[in-house]
Length: 176
Image (cartoon, rainbow, N blue to C red):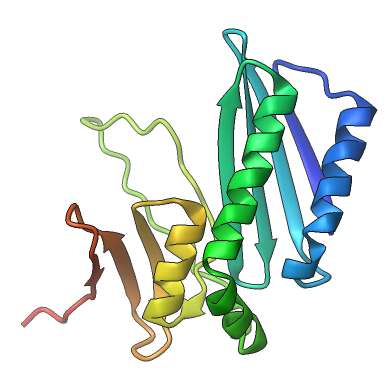
């Protein structure tokens, strides 16, 4: 597994990096050999935040935890990752066996408006997947919505979690 460390307002010890890489190696059985892990550690007002994102084929796993101690934050983030993976283990195994090849996404078009204050822009590839895969991916990331290209229609779709706990799908329709 390829691992990239990013530290914000903190210097990471080599022993810490080795410890995290060992824990990631133990999780290797869940991912393909070409999986990439990004570990972001930051210090803000005496609180440590550890965020781990693992991308394996077209599936991303993400967890983030904050604690007073760096080791506690790291252990919590690994616990969260393992819990999310186990919760969806059978679905993940099925998806990994029948994974769809990655498709590069077109560059998003953002019109800059003077009334709005954009504080962050994220760019990521938009994968072709089934609606169930998109819901699974959204749950793995812990997000409330997820943008994807629908395998059946080839259109961009959005799935989101409703307040009642159910899921909804937004599909584009032609004007006219």
